Length: 499
Ligand code: BG6
Image (cartoon, rainbow, N blue to C red):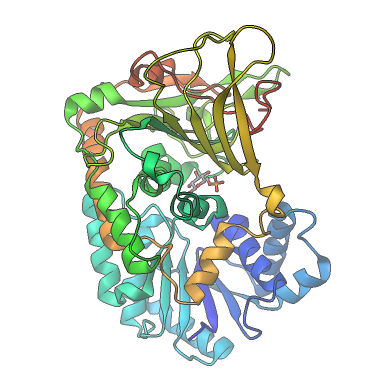
């Protein structure tokens, strides 16, 4: 049964303004929300409905594209929205929430709760919901990442949630899985017969996964300084991308089979020894720099709510190995960072070179074939291969065969959050993370966190904001190869590189 009310804990926070309300607006604009669905923002900030709505309106104007924002739709959308000032940590205040829900939606019981609060409240809110009888079997709960702080806390959080809700009512969101281009990895691999025979250690040399951003931490210092890149991006988004590239074909695309295959990948990640961590994990932190136009970019330690001697990493590069029949010996290099030259997420499959070189190339050695799966921006895919340069002689040159989404009419408006919230309202959990996947992923990364915590002298390399991170990250790629630093444009990169 569809929910009659969405209760957003952390309703006055950054995520609600930046992502959740725009996503709900897009669903509303596309007539994909039930006519009588009510949205209740809950937070500690004292606001009345009018003040709350004007904050949401400002957020919609800022975060929706100009074409998506329409005055009449916005007014209609805001009619759904209400606000309740309450402290979600205080169980006594839940009677007030109960009353408000009854007033707004008749207390049908099928409430959808969205935890968009600081993670410290993720363990408290489910307990309070249960204590107040607001955890009806029809209700659902969406939990934002980071899901836990490490293996132990993730296990504890799973217990707390399962004490109040059944696993099928719990939706752990990783918004990367809501991205059209991320889902397309599955279509690319499993709807085509031509790639799968090559998709293994016999033909693939290495895989690179890069998800970098050209902005700092903005106003999220309070959260970020206690988290860092590993918890914020790697343990969830990057490893999820890796799983989609590495997984075996599921028997069927349903929540059971698909998620079983994801977990199988996590369980086959080769455990990291201390010497692996020293050699193959490089962390960095951005330092102040001056852009070409003279604008100074603040260093991480100068950001609001960040400790002046913070050791939190804003960049992480590492080599991941998978112990499996398919992937033995194929390194997966993954990398993320804030304040990089551009915002781009992509996966590059580097195929093995031909066993015997017949031709030369005016550009040096002929390059290996590559398949680039671009998650964002300029969404699409490029297959790079060598062709003969016209004219005398027998030089070869690498050329691209490209597909971009505009050829399919472009990507639908609304982003990953719209898709996932809609899935949750429809009770579809295939694109949400199961408890065992969360724990298996933490299990892999826990030794890194432990090693960093126990060894104060682990290097944290400074990199000037606006660069590709510490040079030391190059050393983890073997065989004289290096990271591919992507341009914003997916195609024509030999002509220009937009950053
Ligand atoms: C979030 C992280 O999960 O993903 C942010 O907390 C990051 O730090 C964001 O900026 C990146 O997502 P997207 O969809 O903008 O690439």
